[in-house]
Image (cartoon, rainbow, N blue to C red; front, side, top):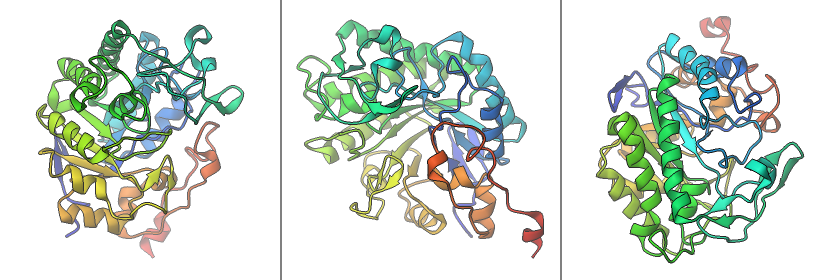
Length: 369
């Protein structure tokens, strides 16, 4: 029997299969970073009975965006838009966690309040681009956060988590990967601080753990999760000892009794397979030694490789991205070994329903053949 299509418990929830919709930035929010009917349709299409979805990265603070069209929950005006999404998912028998993020230095002043500089743990020059009304343009050099500002951001995440509860989500995942703010604090290629937020593993993990506990105060630990990208280099990220760093972070998170830990395999760079990386799912294999709870693995998986990592015991569920974009009924396609639609990369970010809600479901006549 396929483990990928067997039941699994995550926190207080029972899921009928282990195919997860990965958090996918699609940049289709309406003015004010508010989800609209098109976003609700997109998530509804990808909901299966007993299935689990994770929302796209959602801005937790006014200065936290790196992509025009990304949704937010930093303001009460955004709650009703997200209710459309959560209600659509629940009506179809699924569950959805809210992924909260802050872009940190991965931003441009055009996306910042009053045109200010993006914020980061340290003012370290780096490459990368942000998406603005002018299209993809270079990031603006960031300034270092003060200690009082870090405390304010912890509170921002807590209040965003409260809005997520009002919007009807089933839990919260903190996005601490892909070169965004939490990741910038964790890795020493971007964190040059000499205060309590820099230097040792304990100090560099302090911000992430403080926010995790703040969100737990709202949701309870079994409805809170964290996403990490061990050895991730997206956004000019680097660390002098990533294996030791992320092993430490995993052990600390394991103490918090979370719903799950979500891991991105380093073989995926941004949204593109990096063929220079080892094709084996090394991140989950490493972290499993240090984390006692449920693990979701993500990063270029197909049906057979997803089954393999579950059978090996290195992960408990597998998140799919690009194939879920192109196949709204992906769990059923994988279960029945039906062919997959090809994805259209140019329509991944921003735009209309094209490449978003117009991918076909498997035809009934094809099922009967």
